[in-house]
Image (tube, rainbow, N blue to C red; front, top):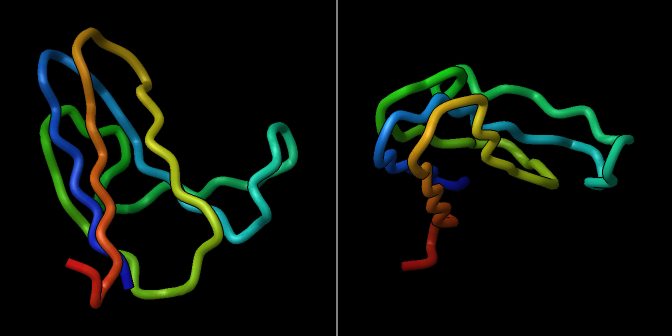
Length: 75
């Protein structure tokens, strides 16, 4: 179980993605998070199933999008 938060500064469109594959450039299937896909404001979500990778994709805009990930049981 992990909690995910993205904080936006400026004008940014972003998507959080996860994978079940071993992340390898060009050979990984990425799945968009339903809550944090094509977002333009700060947001949060959680993932309650096993994944092997997580990434933040900036689709367009200027400014920054900063992702924080916290695993359950770790403070």
